[in-house]
Image (tube, rainbow, N blue to C red):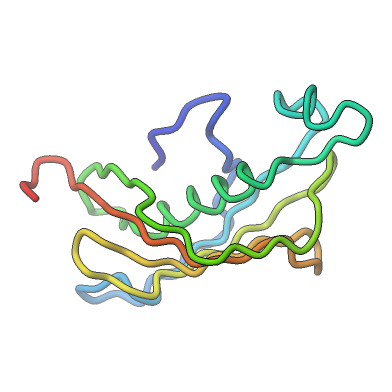
Length: 143
């Protein structure tokens, strides 16, 4: 469902998809997981003595979950790009061995623009939260 490839695909598995149906995507929810292992490429330099997953990669994983929420199974192939990121709040670090659970919900559908509320957590600990506005280009459709 994502165009990303190793090492930049940051979603390991989609756990759940809830689709309210209808013409709009508002209310469509996705729960995804990123298993954070010690051998991730970014831990070699971030930071050598205290490995922490970079916040921008946590945010990218959240955006990838949001992109999955924007696309329904019967949609044509899509290109999704971040247009705006609302105020991001980071609450705790993500370290090797953590399982990052990401919840994304489409809250606005304007045809080629979608807004998703996204949060991530490890266990019961909230890691990050934001709202992401994305532009979507459906393959084969003029904009």
